[in-house]
Image (cartoon, rainbow, N blue to C red; front, side, top):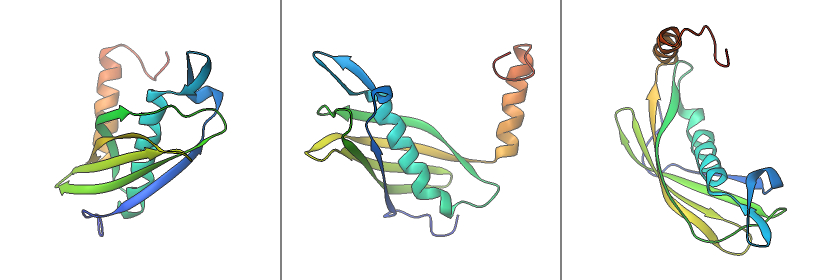
Length: 136
């Protein structure tokens, strides 16, 4: 986890496609669930280089305000800043922009997990459901 400290910043840019939109009114607009996905991916993209090979992160909380519409073919950019590292808990401040304005803002929280322990927990839950793998 070397270098993973408050103040770390990153961003991720996507082109809005129809698949990332919902139709509201007369035109499709970038959906709030797609904005949340962009925020999560931006956070992961920012911190992954600082994690050891035996670490992964899981999103545990997202608070987002969707402030304005973005349309297909526009670029949207999520900017994330790591504002707190509390042992395994990582807290981010987030903002989303298109070419015209800020379209979203909020916070995001992730936890650093041991993939082997997480996989065991998933397997135990699947076993409790009588499933060997997802989708079965």
